[in-house]
Each structure stands twice: as C-alpha cells, then as structure tokens.
Image (cartoon, rainbow, N blue to C red; front, side, top):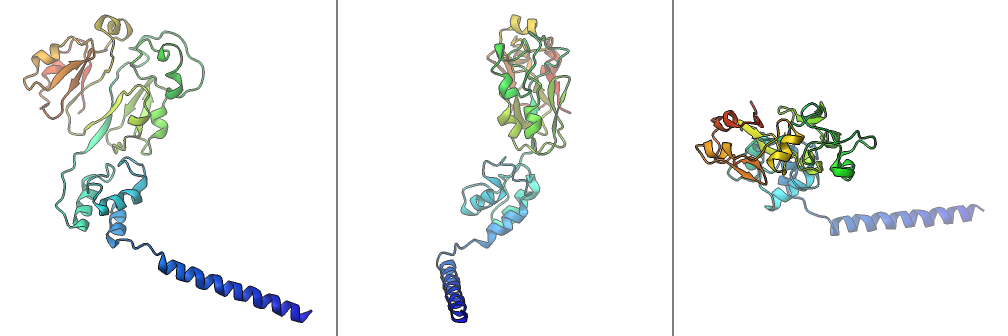
Length: 265
C-alpha cells in the first residue's frame, strides 16, 4: 500500500519536473522580444482602447508606431500631448496634430422636420433605417434621433435633444465611433477650430427639402457665389465647406436663406 503511494508520488513529481523544465526551455526558445519603446509608447497613450486610431486598442497602435506602420500622432484621444511624448520616445520630429470633433450635419429636430408617421418599435437607428421610407421623418437624410451614436460613444460626448443628436465639443475626443455607427452618414469629424459648418446633408432637390424641413439646405448656391475664398461648394443638392480654404469670415452664414450654415463657436 505504502509502496504504491510512494510510486504514484514519484511519478507525479517526475512528470511535474519534466513539464516545468519543458515549459522553461520553450519559454526561452520561443520568447518574443518586445522593443522597450513599445512599452513606453503604450504608457504614453491614454488607454481608452476606443479603436479611433484604426487599430485594435492602444497596444495594437503602440506596436504599429514602433514598427513604423503608424504615425506618432495617430491617437485622436491623446491629441497633441500624446503625440509629442511619443515622438520624443521614438526620437523623431514631432508631427503636427489638428484637434477634431464630431459634428452632426442636421438641424431637423422634432420641431423643424416633418414626420411621415408615428414609429413604435426598436429604438436603434441602424434598424429603423430599414423601415418604410427609411424612418418616420419625412427627410430621409435626417437624423433619426434614436441614439445609436449615444450608446457607442465612450466619452459621453453625444446626446439626443428634441429627437436629434447633439455633440458636446469639449467632451468629444474624435474617436469616430459615432461616425461609423450612424446609418445616415450624418456625422463627420471637423477641425475643432472651425468657425462654421453646414448643418444639413439632404440629397433631395430644393422643393422636396423645403416641404420636409424648415431649415434644410436647398442647394441654391448663394453661399458658393458669395464666398471670397471659394471654400464652399454644392454637391448632391447640399453645401459643403472645404476647411483647408475656409477662413471663417461668416459671409456664407449671413447669406444662407435657410439658415443651415451654423456657427461652431
């Protein structure tokens, strides 16, 4: 009896020692060397793992930066501070960083946009986009207002007011999650220092837009004709601003008959 117990213990001990040695050797043989800079870059990143940089979390971005596959200013959340620190770690010249924020190109809330019908069902913009006429709002390009963007924002920077999404510019970190989730493609990232934005993306012709929304862009082109910098154009019946050219003079906003060019300040 005792002999059997001792034998079993010896066998288990021998197997344990063998496995330990094997794992130790394997760990040394297959060890993946990590560049010390990668850990330093990771520490410089904010750690939100939001994916706004296009990589699977901060560790993925850190590895890409060290490999030279991503720029040192790739993190939209860390902004200029992180970009400067990472450039120093990598021993390269600091790359300029332009802060951006999300903007909802729509003013068609429940008071200004006409409704085709009352909707009852799942409150998810991605689902509602498949119901008749693309949603209950008469404007098929307008914000549905059911908060899919709100639920994906990791910074609590977007919320619904009167049936339309609104962005808190100070909280927004430009991670882009709201941009990706919006089925109407109404949200874009604009420079934080931009003075103006076109709050409409209707692709309907003027008379249709006038019928469906009190303040929708009718594509009249008055803003285009009056812009001294040729920084605005009309495409698919709505105006769009070229922020590389725009100086924020405000003439387009003053001339817009539908008041769909708004101030961001």
